[in-house]
Image 1 (spheres, rainbow, N blue to C red):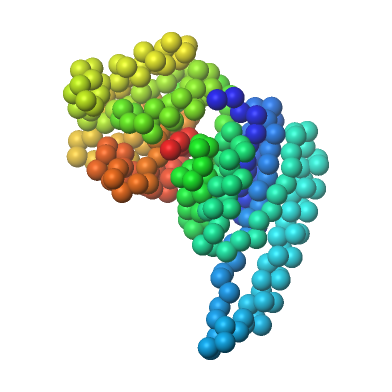
Image 2 (tube, rainbow, N blue to C red):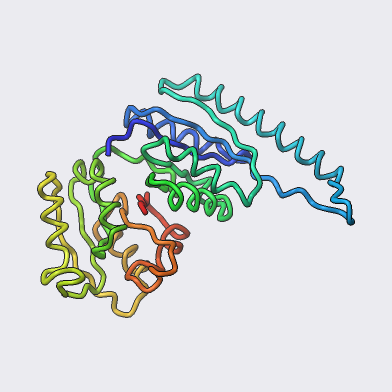
Length: 278
């Protein structure tokens, strides 16, 4: 995947840090930034039997729309001072429809960038993840700390479980993997079966990555009874990983799969950049 267009999703109430991170990322990768500023309003209330819309709600809605216009103007002013290619879009949407609105915009980006301000707001983050990750083919790069994401990371951890989602994450993150000093393919308590990981778990994906010039090591890790998300995060620390790459899961039928229960916790507790694909 060559990154040419980045969708930076910004919360209308707090966006300055996330915007600066998006500008730096696009400057580093020579990519175009579409800054998408989102305001999520409440659905219209109904009063009595005649579906009369509350005057208070109408006034609040108008104020929120004005705030959105002001934020979009501020973002344009800040981007005009940068040297990157950019455009700004704004969405005023109901909370229930926000994911769909974000998904439509994600269709036209190579990656969706989520900065620390958006990541810290659980409800906002959930709408971005649900929309961009689970209702579009576009991967997400969550940057919870705001540290610069280099084009040549020293180390990347690829969480592997031989699933379609993990394979897609590996394929879409190849630019990062190829430029990394080392890539650790991490398998937690892998089963060596022909229908699962093969007789030598991790060997197949390691050969695939090596053919692309990736400097790869296979790490088979014992969970020791710990949750998988804790095991992966600790291993990322042990190998000094600059990024974690993993597949994302949201379908009930995947609930019993190896990584089926860790997507939410990894997103919530991420300490380093997290590249996710579905």
